[in-house]
Image 1 (cartoon, one colour):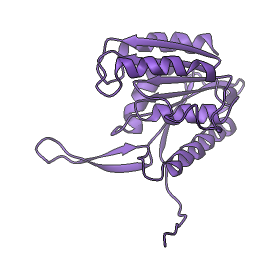
Image 2 (cartoon, rainbow, N blue to C red):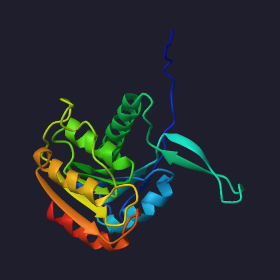
Image 3 (cartoon, rainbow, N blue to C red):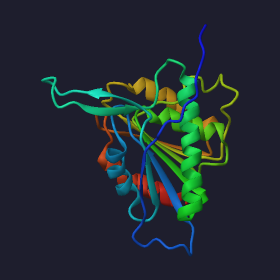
Image 4 (cartoon, rainbow, N blue to C red):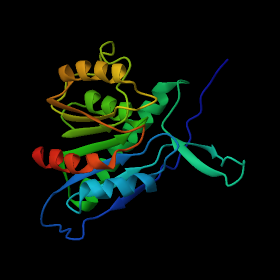
Length: 224
């Protein structure tokens, strides 16, 4: 007989406040999530370049940790991820719970604007953010997905609905995990679920193309 236990789990995030932050106005919020093996610090370096000192920036760390070792088996460090195919609903629900908690925190303590929330993700976290946006229509202004996928059950899952959320999807032409054919499928499947879709390809392997950052900034400004 299989049973379950519910126990508290510490989840970690980093937060950066713009230098000109004032409580006299509401601020747009950028929540960033790293890819598989990444961490909140690596994502914050990118999030700060995107936010450009004009948004509150929070980066959430994946709740699943594991060891990463160098080629010689030494210099072990912790990597983090968002879930596996074992009981995936548990990982999805935890992600949604944490996003809700971060939004509430930013609104209540740092004057974030609930009407101007943007989710940024690289790789594995992209599908989690899409799930959140399409499961909570009206809560997210924009989703920026970089070198990642969409929910595999997008059309089959009744919990995923069209949302007034704008989407910017950045794909890499030399991505070993997401082929051009796979990305073309995403480009066809996303529009029925979003207010708008800007789908762009960059000449890059599976990594966050830094030359996409100016366009991401411009895209966010257009949807503020």
